[in-house]
Length: 283
Image 1 (cartoon, rainbow, N blue to C red):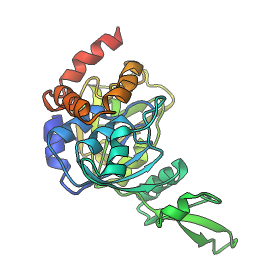
Image 2 (image 1 turned 90 degrees about the vertical axis):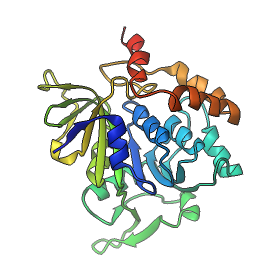
Image 3 (image 1 turned 45 degrees about the vertical axis):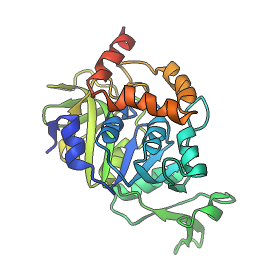
Image 4 (image 1 turned 135 degrees about the horizontal axis):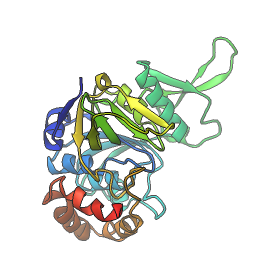
């Protein structure tokens, strides 16, 4: 049964040095607050998994937490490159990292395989793609029934998956509305999971028909963090802070500016700051 706890306690107890950690959320529900707590606690040597790594991965890589990134397309959405990730890859600052790049379809299938307890994902993909030349984990198998050549990649099986969602009830069942992405599969594929939510309620009333409910027995910890997805959006709660993504392009372009911003906005503040920041977005 999911435990309702604090963000600091959940990260301290469930995220360990050297873990493989997935932070998922597609377009909205990106778990920024949880990633910031991981940074504050100085977790290290993490293998980070994510479809479309964006600002939170730029921040964690820039703070030296990551040893490897497994991903599909990395960028500041709608703006440009991830400059801290690029600095790590090209210059080894603050440390060198390994990368394993896949397609979106590959990542989604790898989570699905992990959720099913399978060792690998088998699907149609990568035909004619250059990724096969640089990623030795993209392999081929022959279907024993049709003789068709198919792609095979390792399943995603994180030690910990961290997501954000709209609501949880007091048992720890989690409600996700809007774009679902791969959050469900990422949680089911993981050994442990942390879900930050906007609020805990008694009942899920007036739920949207496009929803996902993760039952409490699939979730390890639930944490109430209003605004925990900011600057991404949470469907039904607040809008995307486009200005923050534009600003990040400038902040991340210089090492000293980046470090000063991280100190002022992450290292020296707690998760409660998100509630104050997002309150203006709700109005």
